[in-house]
Length: 485
Picture (spheres, rainbow, N blue to C red):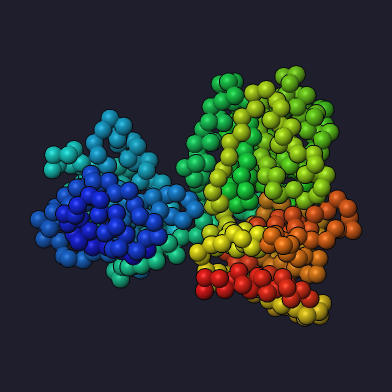
């Protein structure tokens, strides 16, 4: 995306042409639905700056309607200096719902997001009344206050060497959206934000449980959508009023143990006994698709009898690791319970768009993307010795190697890593439809492709795939990587 000149962008243009004109100026990927009142407000701001004799630089190099990738956090106007200064200007039309409290809350959230790309953040909201008048607010150490445009001009002058393009590269989802297990300190200290979608789901579940009107919930979504973060955030909020535990369907990792020791009021457990149903009022289950049939039925019986007041289940049937987990189909069992409500997180937020697109294309060659893959490496090893050398080389560069073994895949459940390395050997092949398949595992219950999906979906920034002694699969993956380069 490219920064624009506010004067040039808001010159009178016939309505239907505005989205095309703005896209041509900003080089954004998708046309906006232009709001006429916003253009009127920006024209008004330009006029105020001009009256004050502000330098030309004050209206240049603004990013209009920028949204942080994956997170859905939008900024109306944003100007970023390479010297660490940032000016954020939000646009509002006066209405009963636009209260000072809401204006302050939005600016406070914006400051949090922007603090990772700038050391000094100047935040403003312009509220217009539609009559060539308006009120300019700013957020300072004392909270929200009204100010004049001279204040804005003064702080715009602090920006040196403004960023003029590719602002999206400054933002990484992992800086905001964390794994409670990979970064338990940040989680326990509340150093994270939920997306707008997660926040709405959170409030819906908390309200239902506290009122007693909706107490049996499911949260689903693909890998990287923030299901576990949302679950633990809800558990932490409920722990002030209820005895609560989170059942982790797998082996507790080092990160789980650290989180377990740091959370005062939330118990993190691998399983439950009958005695536990007397101790907890709310039971949360992470990775429900892996929960044993026996424990699931015990939880359902305790809920049905009233020993448990509420349940929250998190799951993704695509992330089963064995045939028995797939055949058990725990999500379908939950659907049978009266009062069950399922919420779906639809968009990937932890994994980059690039890695997400590559994983989809790797599993199904028909799934094309217009993205390029500069953070994906596909390497080839002709034997085990070459594989060992390449693995060692990648590990020295900071990659986390996850072997396609059932136990190793269980060890990384819920975790995430900046760089992930996996190996595809002769077990894998593509069928006639372009779907990645594998031979039957010696352990009859194990599913190699599912293990692979579990492992590659742990990557946040970079992914390396070593193909060993399998030229046909290597050829297809190289074709995927080169498709849009």
